[in-house]
Length: 155
Image 1 (spheres, one colour):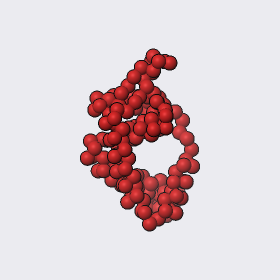
Image 2: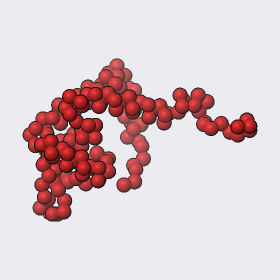
Image 3: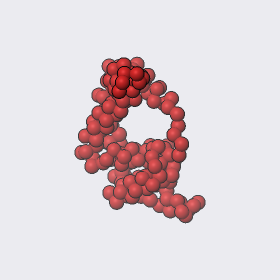
Image 4: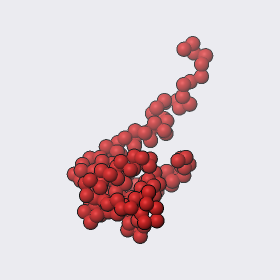
């Protein structure tokens, strides 16, 4: 560098001032905490997300297919299919042919899957409460509002 080039970043403190980098670091820390909480349930984070979304949809009277579950969770359809198969092998959900479309599979949690989802959701919510600070409800509400504002991704 000759000193004539503009700064490589618009943030004077570099990464320490970059909201994107700080969000990345915060996300990694939060994921580690969630992963640790889920270890006792023998669930990966993505297995938990899909199990919890399927449970939530089922509790609200919906029997999602894999595409609907992927949309609810914001996950890739092919990856969702692979994880759903693993959850089925574990006996946590069942894949049934959709009578309206024999190419699609409706998903239904087994009783064991529903119970595990309830317990795992409580564990992850406890992580969230500790991680985001029970003493800072205004900050948590602000963060939630900011995260909801993000533009939708294509696909």
